[in-house]
Amino acid sequence: MQQIRNDWTRSEIKEIYYKPILNLVYEAATAHRQYHTASEVQVCTLLSIKTGGCPEDCSYCPQAARYHTETKVHALLKKEEVIESALKAKEAGSTRFCMGAAWREVRDNKDFDRVLDMVKGVNSLGLEVCCTLGMLTDEQAKKLKEAGLYAYNHNLDTSEEFYEEIITTRTYEDRLNTLENVRNAGISVCCGGIIGLGESNDDRVEMLYTLSTLPEHPESVPVNALVPVEGTPLQDQPRVSIWEMLRMIATARILMPKAMIRLSAGRQEMSTVEQAFCFMAGANSIFSGDKLLTTPNPSFGDDAAMFELLGLQPRESFKEEQVSVC
Image 1: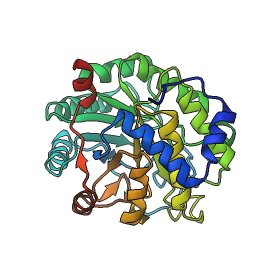
Image 2: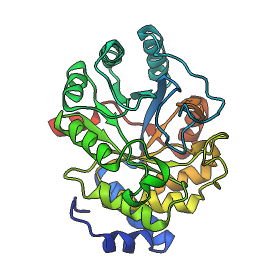
Image 3: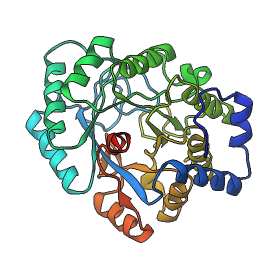
Image 4: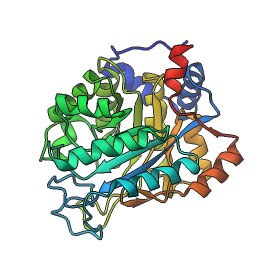
């Protein structure tokens, strides 16, 4: 069985990453089947509960206030709107509901109190609740845990070396500190990155090195392909190829065999065949629903048809707890 390791070296990761693609996918598929049911895919839905007006300068993001994009700013949604969206997602087959707010960091104010109430409400529906709200303090993470938060997403985006080419309004260390606060609060960690930002293969290897050598691997690792948005500094970046996605997914699967590897942003541009290859390489989680925060995403109906064609089924909520109890 593929061993769980947190002591990977950069040279080991490079050796895996650059293997012939078919050999790499085969090795990843083998590791995947040792820890997961190959026909199960976690279906998640991501809702933007507060859109636009963000003070950060993430070069890929249409929600940054400083960029001129078509994204419309809207204030924090009402709890009733969020619960309605969560119910629709559950009825469509989602088992994890993620709420994203375009904040630099969480502030201890009425808006955070409202988010805590949303977490309680979605948790009562029997869904795994995830949030991505920016940077968190230790105390804020504890409050989210007490409210019933299951997972927290906070991506590294890229390597530490390339990071300042993409973001200058917060540091890599800020991101790692938030991950530590989330972990210390007993919340499941969701952390991955984006490819296609203009980074090198070495940057991709370095990001995988950082993720796979954390004291504990993230329970969920999103692999995003950049969706270039007009008005952002990265609007003219070329589309990431399927082969690049496969290398990232397969290498992540081998390095972190127990993690859920999420095929995230960029899926709208991928054919069913390309997505099937990603599932073969170890991806076992997707976002479903018409929008991924502010960018297009395959609909529930499209994904249901793909699941039927490929013989896939949605993973149950809270399966990790069921496994650990057994």
